Structure formats: structure tokens, C-alpha cells
Length: 280
Length: 198
Image (cartoon, rainbow over all chains, first blue to last red):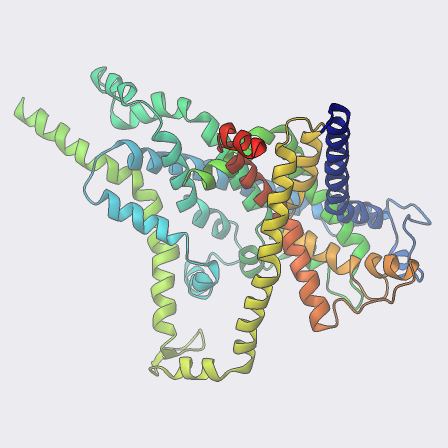
């Protein structure tokens, strides 16, 4: 093969790659574009025949309606504070247990850890009905505590933290013990600062899961002022015609916070996903 | 001195359990207890309010005779066969393409393909319902504008299955791609070199 032929082949190859990537990116982004365009249409425009790509009459009314008449701001606030509390406590307890499983010696460690990993395979639907009955007795129905407490520690997070902390040197822990630190003191002063990157990764994933959680909040939240974002979007759909204009506006607003978090912390996000899955 | 040593040892022994206690408290209350409860309830007649009444295997006998249940098993299998191979193949191809050293705008492509994964399922469900609406949807508009017939996406079994498979593929393709990229990066370069020489 001559040199020019090889260069030509490489060029075609590269162009093909860009072409495929562009087509895929178009299809992954297109629904978002359609969401955005629809959010500026009135309901009559959405159900117009023939459908137009761009709004014939550009309107901001949907955004005003969801905040003014449907109190969507309240839902955003609820999701935000539930996410922050659940994420914060969960990171802490997962790190604590992950530290114990990776660096401390105790009887029954392997069996306990195995049971923890096995619990990852239990689908939520198995526990859904009994959990509802339990929460009913606790009077946790239609309360945010029912969303926060069950998520305060989870098996995936502990597994993740254990993986990360197994890379920490024992000498650090020993030096803490010699200095007379308590085990908890070692964890707070020496381990947590080292584990900060892992905590950031985990925190982003936890917050995303909490923000997007739908089924359980849908089951236990009843009153409109307690609704989280996902439940509130579902609640728009109560009339004869689905108010797609409002739903699209609310959906677009709901993805903005996660989008910002994702773009700002892309590295942590991706390392959180890959470390949790690939290393294990 | 011995007393101090004893208490120190005792502390050393107990501390790990205290560290893992928060998780196991939650685990027992919200996981183990409900699972056992579900198991017992599956052998009982129970309406959620009154006392349970033991009925043995009757619920299971009813279940395997239930047409909707059997159909849902088939549906689950069909969906699995529909999107899992497709998604893995797409994700692998994209991961290989994005792992090429001379590709620019990698960050843009990666973000664009990954973004569906962080989007709430509720929002995605609605946007797909709107796009695949048989009368007012974008998909049918695109089809009819190039002279193809409109398809009743959501009101036919095949169409609905296709849309659902598409939704799941769309949402999780980027996630799988990221996993595969991480996997590909652990493959030593020497293997790629060897393949190229061959």
C-alpha cells in the first residue's frame, strides 16, 4: 500500500467515525431539543395538525404556570433538601462502614459483607408492599422522613467505599493509633480526608438517584406540598388531555440542576460509575 | 494496667461493629424484615389490613395459572432479548470510536451520549410518549414527510415494545459506553499493536 493511499484510508476512517458519532449524538440530544421546543408551545400547538417543529407562537406561559399555579418551586425545594440530607448522611455512614470492612478486623466480617453484597440483588418491588405497611405504622406516610431514612446508608455505597479504602496504607492508621487517636478519631481525621475523591463521586451518584427517584416517593407522598420533582411532574397529568406543555416545561427545569452538576463534576461522576462497576 | 488493656481490647473489638451498625439497622428494618414479610405473605391470604390467613401454596397455584402473569414473563424476556444485545453492541462500538486517540470533541460526544442517563425516568417517559404519539408525534411526522406511512407506535403491541426498547437503550447506552471505555483503557496497548501488525 502506498503512503498516500494509507493517508486516504485513515481520512475516510476518521470521517466515518465523526459521522457515526454525530448521528448518535443527534439522536441522544433530539428528545431534549423536542422537550425544550415543546415547552415553549401552547397545548393547542402541541396537539396541532400538522405538527410544527418550532413553536408558531413562542410563549413563556408554561414556565410561569408551573411555578405560579402548580407550585413547582416547592417541589424543587423538597427534592433539593431531601437529596442533600440523604446524600450527606449516606456518604458518612457508607464511608464509616466501608472503612470497617476494609481496614478493621472483626469476627463475621466476611459473612456480613457477603450478606451486604447479596442484598444488592433484591429488587425494590419485593420490599415495597411490606415497607408501605411498616411506614404506615410508623406514621411516615406523606412525610419526607420516609424518603430520607431508608436511604441513609446503602450496600452499593459501602461496597464502593471499601474498594477505595482498601488502597489506603495501613501505616497511616498505625501512626494514628500510636498517637493515641480513638478508632473514630482516626476515621474522621485521617481517613475521611484521603477518601474525599471517592466521597465526591459517591455523593453525585447518590444525589442523582435521590433526585430522580420516582416509585417510592410516588407511593408514600400524598399531598401536593410534599411532592418531589418526579412526583410533581407525574401529578400534572390529571385531566382529560395530558398537559404536555406544562410537563415539558417542568421536565426541562428538573433536568437543569443535574446537568449543571454533571458538567461541573464530570470527572468525579464518571470515576464514580466506573470504579463502582469495573473494579468489583 | 490490665484493666486499661482489657478495656482497650474490648473497644478494639466492639468499634467495627458500631461502625457498621447504621447500615445493618436500616438493612434489617427496610430490607430483611420486608423480604421475610413478603415471603410469609405469599403463603397467606391477606388484604393489607386484616390478619393473615395461611393458605399454603394457593397463591402460587393461582399465579402460574394467571394469563397476565405468564404474559408479563414473556414480555420481560422479549424486552431483554430486544434491547440488551443491541445496547451492548452500540455501547461497545461507541466506546471503541471514542477511545481512538485522534478524535476531537471527545468531551462533547461523551456528554451528549451520556446525558440521557442522568435524566429522570418520568421526564423521559413523557417525552417519548409525545414523540411517538401516533397523531401528533414527531416520529410519525418524520415518517410521513418522507412518504412513509404513519405507525401506531403506542397502540400496537409491536410498536409499544419497540418504543420501550428504544427508550431503555437510549437511556442506558451512554452508561454502558462509559463502563466499556474504562474497560478498554485497561487493555494493554501491546495487544492492539499486535492486532494491527496482524
